Length: 213
Image (cartoon, rainbow, N blue to C red):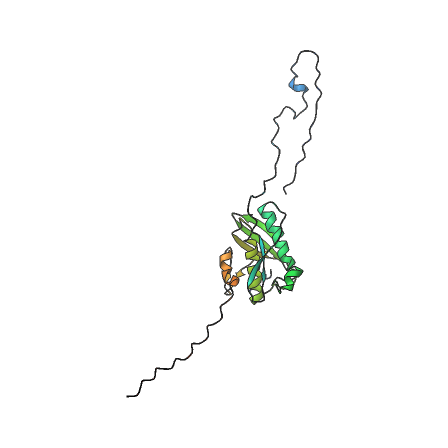
């Protein structure tokens, strides 16, 4: 059961100084140079280049057969963190009208919010905000599966830690066990495959009739 609990662009000022063309060049005393202009300029800050990664990002929704299925979303973010944040927003929005027509749903409450806390060494901390009571039981396990499978579909994200209303939580696995370990897609492989129906019982086989002597 789940417990309740820019890069800022720097402007560079470019100052143009007029230099007289007549006469021989002369050395300007350092005392006549305004403070700071004789110092070597620091390199300008640059933004981190976008991750050159294939677009495999998906949100995971619940099918009528209680199986999680992926659905593609268009993302505009360039970096891994931006893609993850945008994808989590789209998961929190729930199914599109067309997906609802296909009877796809989400276990996340409509008022729940998802955001990125940190991304380190491929492990993302996902912050969940839920004004009401967080889902528990089967709904809680499904919502955790949706978040983990969605987040790990972003290239470079291999595992997820969860926070609820600012507190680290023990997350439920499909079997109901609680864990504080980073969650991976492999932990939720069972919810991607429909459970096979039990095979019908074998028909009774009549013993062969021995011919009469």
